[in-house]
Image (tube, rainbow, N blue to C red):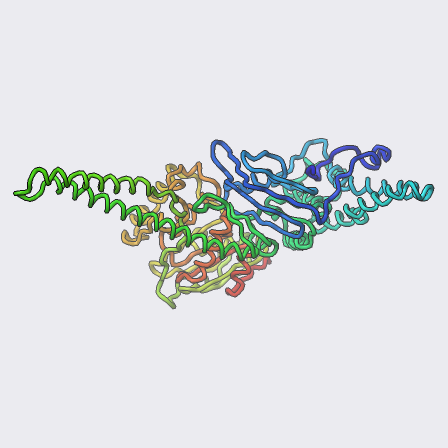
Amino acid sequence: MPLSSPDPVGPHPSAEPERAAERHLTLPAGGRAQLVATELTVHRGGHRVITGATLRVSPGERWAVVGDNGRGKTTLIHALAGRLTPDEGAVRRLGTLGLVDQDLPAPRHRRVGDLLEATLTEARTALWALDEAALALAEDGTTAEASYSAALEAVDLLGAWDAERRLDQALAALDACRDPDRPLNTLSVGQRYRIRLACLLGAEHDFLLLDEPTNHLDAGGLAFLTRALREHCGGVVLVSHDRALLHDVATDVLDLDPTFDGRPRVYGGGYAGVLEGRHRERARWQQEYDAQLLERDRLERAAGQAEARLSTGWRPAKGTGKHQRQSHAPGLLQAVRRRQDALEAARVDIPAPPPEFALPDLCPQPGRTLLRADRVRLVGRLDPMVSLDLEAGSRLLLTGPNGAGKSTLLHLLAGHLAPTEGEVHRARDVRVALLGQEGAPHRRGTAADAYRAYTESSVAHGVLGSAEQVPARSLGLLDQRAWDTPVRRLSTGQQRRLDLALQLATRPDVLLLDEPTNHLSATLVDDLTEALATTGAAVVIATHDRQLLRDTAAWPHLDLVPQ
């Protein structure tokens, strides 16, 4: 079936009712709907982005597609929607599809009303056709009965009776513009996105395909989106880094992150299932890789021993006859060849598992007060006076609306800003690290160069002892290819990982994190959250991330309220 879209297409349904009645309706398939992808493989720029992805989406199922940046999540969505043809494999669609991309073009001639009218075209056409069929039935009940039944079925499948109500409800819940005369190019990206998302949720599609739908939504919009997806009778395919939405919505997960055989994994049991499945997959991968390395080492030793025997076999003890030496040599030579053939056949064809995140050992003296803020404020940026003590192992969650001063307080605690009132006291030799919302400007050289320069500078300035340096690879934040990449060419997510690595390199006693989940994959955020719960360092977090707020709900809170 063709892809449905909230973009305006075709004539205004109420302008020419005769032509509207002749217009072919694209009806939902209801319980018969299916969206099946089989062994999808897609190449981009000479690289294989997706390998052998398979999923079957039925009505009532909500699939999440997860993976780090660049793993092909958006590519997969476009393949499912028919916007691109896979290099291998196939997609079979039965039913209507509604797709919302991350971006919405805004041509000058398009208005808000164009999107709204296009969303209601099918429903209004079906209702008009039903009215026409009812009139025909009243005139001739025999010949028009079949037409009336078909028109009534179309209205029911499209949910046409309350189509306008559903759209109005979605627009209001998402705080989307409802002025039909407003040009789209006068709206912000977020405002345009909310209109398009409302059009999608207000329609009755068999399948909803959503790429990062939580972008540009406030708390009310997020709650409405979650409820709408859970109540949707059809199928859903969702790409999102929002772990709260994944926990609340997903029934099945397609994981595009690396595996030992390069093929995506499917996990049931919602997002909790993927966390458990990934641990099993990682353990299996490591076991298979270690087994191949051990077998390779064993065969190398065996081949070396056979070659050594061959060498000594050509030099028997004195008194051994020439005939004996010659008869013994072929057997030794055959043994060497067998060992070499076995070694050649035992190539390590399983790639090394990707690095796992590991927080370095952060263990300041227990019970020691590391940092104290005494009635600090910064006029115009942090108006309420704040006092707090941070001891080793303490936890603190900063909450409050945008503009309340959460980021400012973190910069005051880090010593990057000076308060206009009050003082910040730091114990002697205490190391404080701040991961801000924005990283440092582009550095020269590779990521490895940047890390090496930062740690060497820390040692040179006495911040870090030479024996305390943290090996870059031990953090598990970047693979070797990323470490060897110039910083300016790293993706946003990779640069964020590098920023985190630099802050951890000094083994901080106090770790200050400002929106730490920004641009990080869900997998890394899960690992980071688990590590922060057990580290001996003092940790302060400011975040709006819903899942991180849930995970740290038991931490002490400091709520900053603007005055």
